[in-house]
Length: 266
Image (cartoon, rainbow, N blue to C red; front, side):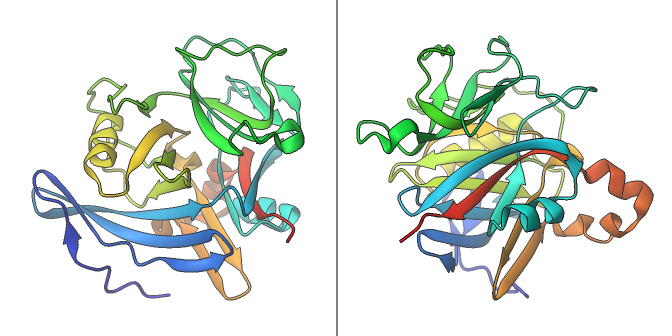
């Protein structure tokens, strides 16, 4: 699909972005692409998925690495994206929860945030999906009431609006998960390797998207987002699609851990 017109620029100052033109993918599920400018120069295009957790559930899965399209087909999920970091043994370096099963270490001091979803029994006192600041909300095997979760680092923005990452020169493709002030979960995926983590945090803080908290996920070739519905399909970053057809390159893009978004039953 062609996204030739992305709306009028928003914001004043160093960062600006075009108005999201939301495409409805399902109940409480929508997608937009926004162009990001820095000092009035376009620097990247972001794919953004907005999820209402009241209408959609999250599932974390970990298995032998596979193509994100294979993950989508297996999970029958309209949205699939990469999770956090893993080691040479392909095991997560931070804790993940998949249907209540814990995989990876409970304690890794580098992990400063955790995306959690699907509380046990869907308790009315707990959000169906949120981001925990692990520096103020320590977790243990006995007190974590959610069944799905992904630890990662760094926490780009915390709930007080503070940027929680140092300014370093390293840039890469990025996947970031965030929560807005209306309790929607937002998934961001960059098209280019433009953003440092600090710059991404600055942009989210300055944006009109009302970000409440944001957690970085794995980056580089692992930073992937795939959307497939009956009438819409999108792989992001789009610049990698041709490389995925090359077998040697293809191996670099396989993912051992993903997060899926699936509609809740009516």
